[in-house]
Structures are given as C-alpha cells and as structure tokens.
Length: 401
Image (cartoon, rainbow, N blue to C red):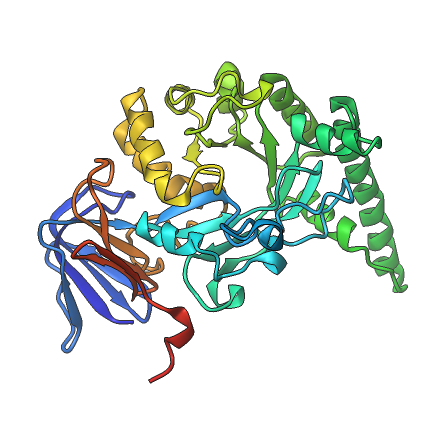
C-alpha cells in the first residue's frame, strides 16, 4: 500500500492546513505530510487537485455490525438483556462485517468506529475499535477491548423493571454498578494473595475485566443523559477511582464547569433525533459548543443506527451553525474521539506514523454539498464516488487475482 496523494488542500487536523500538499503512505502508514515531499521512484500518485484531503473520521460510539440494518431480529445483537452485569461480554464477538452500514460509513468519510454494546444493562460489556472495511472483524481490528460500556438512566431501569427484577430504579442501577466494583476489589485482593502464595486461583471473566477498569487500563464509557445521572456517574467514578468517559451527555452543558475541572470528556450525540424520551428534553445542537467553550474535550457521535453513520460530519456542520468552533468541530470527529478512546497512536490525524486512512473530499467536508470522493484505509483504496455512483471495494476478493 504505497502511494502519494498530491496537490490537494491537506488538513492534517493536528497541524496547519497545507495548500497543494502531499500525503505519502508506505506499507500502510503515513510517512510524510507536507508541501515539498520527495516521492520515491515508482510510487503510485493520486492527484487530489481541487479537493480537500483529511484523515478518515472516527466514530467514538456506534453499533455498526451488531445492530445490522435491514435484518431485524436476526441482526440485532446489541444488548444481552438477561444479566445486569455483562462485563464479560464482547462486542467483538457479534460484529458482522457484511452490515450495509460499513459501506455507508466509507461514503461519509468514516474509516474507524468504536463498536459498543447497547445501553440496556447497567454494565453492557467490552467495546472494540475497528476499521470500517474488511472480510472479518479480526482483520478490521484496531484495538480490543477499548473500554467497558455502562448505562445509567431510563434504559436499564425500563429493561429490568419490565422483568420485575433489580434494577428497576436509578437507585438499583447505581447499586448494581457499585456492587460489581466492590466484588472486583475483593477479587483483586484474593487474586493477589493467591499469586503471592503461589496458589491456584479460579478466574472470573466478569471480575477480571472490572479489575482492569479499577487499575486504570480501560476507561468506563458511561451512557448518561440527564444532569442527575451525570452527577451519579461522577460520584461512582470518584468512589472507585476509575476513568469515566461520558457517552451522550445530553445535559452535560448544565455541568460543563464541573466536567472541565475534572477533565471528563464527553462523546455527545446523537444530535439529529427527536426528544423521544424524558431524558432527551434538553437535546440541542448548541450543546457541543457550550461544552467545548467551557474547556470540555468533545467528540460527536451518531450512535448509529440512531443517526445513520454517514451523517456524522453533518452533525458537526450543524453544531458549527449553532456555535461550535469550526476547528473544534473537525477535531470532534477525528483527533478528539481517537484521543478519548486511546486510538490516537493509530488514527485521527494526518501525520507520520499513523495509519494511512485518508479521504479525498470534493470540497470542505463541513459544507453539506461536499462528497467523499476517494477513501483509503491503510493506504488501500476502498471507496470511490464517480459519475454519480458509489463503489465500495469488495473485501472478500481483495487477495484473489
């Protein structure tokens, strides 16, 4: 995968734009970005004159492949709603790369997605970061687990309240999470004692992953909308000392100063929805700008399929219309989500050492009339738009000559 994308308006995100710039990709990695980049002999040259060249977008919270489009019950693997504590569950094991959404992602310039279990359980399971093109999830894999998904608020209390079991209230949801971490603390102590004494120890998949959260290895992705639930999320994280990342954060703007002071990032969205339940009453396209101006690190999410994945950039555009700084908007779908989810050593910007995930746009991607014309994943062209037709390279035949 060796090529040079030349003559475009290059927007590295983590640096100043370069008019007439070049992005050099060798062995699937970016090796140079600049205006006067010497090109190796025999390199494939892609002329991007008149276009904008950006890193592939990063969706920090989606359900591509686990909540498949047009499949109904057969393709619905988002929530294992039979156990309030699903920490041992892995989104990785449920992703179908044939989901139509992956092609849509590429058409919208999205090359990386963090796939998460749903929000039906207080503790939903482990998340995974993948590229949006490939034959199997193992080939698409960037990192796993990336974090552990948890939910506060209406969803888990509705799911288990309907089953007439704990948790059916916000008290119960918080208690499930608190009990789980107390058991994980005890488990860690027993494990350490057994190791010190050289004794065998029976492992527990649920508690093993929660110990990794307690040890700071994995962030806690907390689904939460209302301000009171956000306060509970902060309270629990302070009690047990883990790193919390707010997901959705609909009323996060009401606690923006607190979130900024505690350096709690917010993956905000989806922003193109109706106020379909009580905890969404303050959903607004103004909220990302309010958070960002307060000093909160913000990423924007579609929560696909709640909002179709290829509309990620349009949410950023309309957030700009409602007050979000333009540069921050681009970072909110590139470098910020990559950094929040611990992926910025691979994706999120155009700079040497990162993966060759590059998108050539017809113009400014924040202009709703612009299109992703060519998409490269690790230096391989996987999507093309030309003559009114979108073409996704078939990954199942990529090695067949």
